[in-house]
Image (tube, rainbow, N blue to C red; front, top):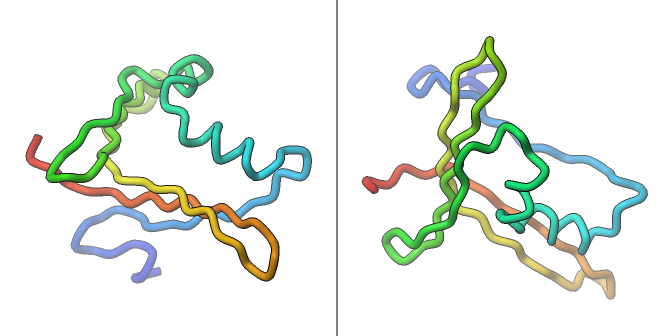
Length: 102
């Protein structure tokens, strides 16, 4: 576990893999990348926007969890890559937490 829970930060690192059999990949990518739509369906989203910082698009999200958890702030960069692998279209969404002075 030292790799997944580095002592210097005290935060977990993780990757998520999954399969949505009844959701076409392009539809899922559109769903994930649409911040305005997320505000409509996610009741825990208190604030969510994208802003340019140091030439990169940075996403800020404040999540207001239920009574037993504190609000959380998330700041991250993300991108979507569309690739052709052996004639198959593949979408990869990458997101990484960042710290910005703003």
